[in-house]
Image (cartoon, rainbow, N blue to C red; front, top):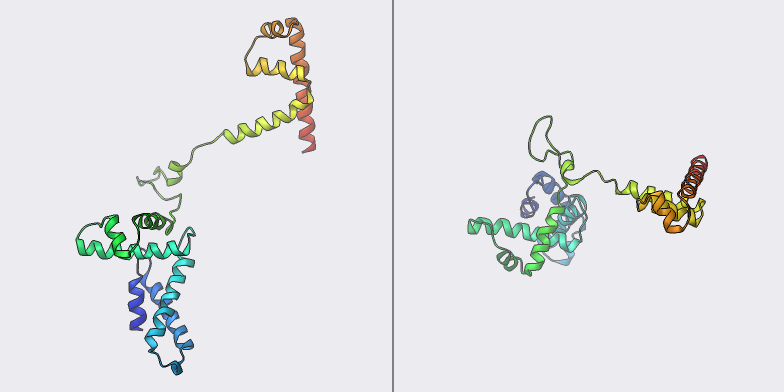
Length: 221
């Protein structure tokens, strides 16, 4: 058990209950005892250590990450965490990326990636307060989202495109000039060579066809 405890302490990290880690390490110890073969004539600790560490690493990989990241990156993140803790105590300040990279025998890019991956370790509820406390306190959800009406516009546009199949090409062009280009009926008539009265009649007929098509779609739905 002292061996299991020492290995659990090695992997203790902020926010992870030590009792949980000790329990996992103890489970690894039990598995090592069950699988150990004295006939091989090796020290029990030599066999138990990798078995216990494997159980602890599996626990971190499968149970504690809010967002799944590659196994190698998870292990690098834990190595970086331990190095940061040790260097901070030794140097009495926060270590630089270069110092961390030297401690874990990795490149600075790998250290930066591991530090970034560490953000996937814990998830924070969107209902958590973002600052102030009280009944009117803003939550994280208030700062990460806005009302987006683009989806509704896209859906309306798709519906309109389908309904426009119910009118002729000439009627479609007149509707486009009137409602998209905001042209007057007189300007539209002059553009296509008909009277303003004819343009008015074309628009009324086209709109009525669109209404009939929309009603048909509604009944079908």
